[in-house]
Length: 411
Image (cartoon, rainbow, N blue to C red; front, side, top):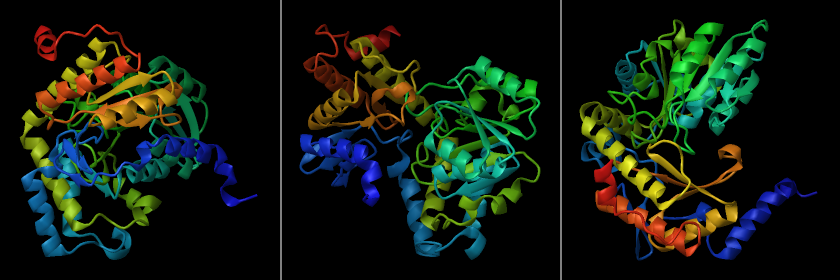
């Protein structure tokens, strides 16, 4: 048996994609022009699949901060913070994050994936219990495996099922740690966090919320769903990423929990991964500053998200239940999703194909992400391309919805 025979089914699926002449996993942009446009060969492509929620990747102050830090502190750290030491800017970013969230402690990881991997594996050992929303991100599931905790899943966004699961575990030794997300990355829906908090209090559990897709999006100051729901005091740990609203790479955790710093030696992904380079730390620090002092960015993002969500809904697409920066059109099957994606790309629109097991309930999705940097005309053009492609494939009717300007004015 050959080493990769275990991936025979996956290899077959990949080969079938290659045979069709399009493959969403091999898209390469020759030039990225802005947060909203790129070039593939000589074709200009409108970007609706980048998670660049606040459009800060090309912000002048963010770029200048990264360039200055590289000149002053070098290209990289060449090792972990435990082995090579922390730079002053690492500590500074952690203080800024803790201050932003009104928390005592902050901890920075090299990726958002590692933040979940490192925090969950350190918080819950083999005698503890992680109670996960069934639609949790892969990094949450992987973090639970690394720590060897007992894992219990509850139905997505179902407080009653969470309550039932914790009731069954009430007499079982070990800590119980609930893990939910602010905005779920596939359908863009939010967690019923107030109801989850009530269940958490009832059973004396701990609560971790991953605000990866809700940082910079929800809440009066952009802290995420916990702020928007008014339950920040009941959330024990907030995990997030720098690769969405802050336009960089990296992850973090903030908390008021006493003894928090022991996680720096208990978390293997933190201990054994090279730390973020100075340029990234500086860029993220400035991006966080922009988030805090430019609330208009968040409002523009939400306006764009509502416009795009309404546009696809009015055309008759089956989409997620809430207007958020994540807008997914549910496709009948994976083959249709790939074909739709390909036709959109040929027309000049880049989106994402999302398939099982990454998607809930085995859905095939055409996933788009909206940015504050998108103009109204770009939003409307993307809706138009969805309409033309959907009609050509027989997925929506021939009757056009009202023009975007009329739809938005009517809301």
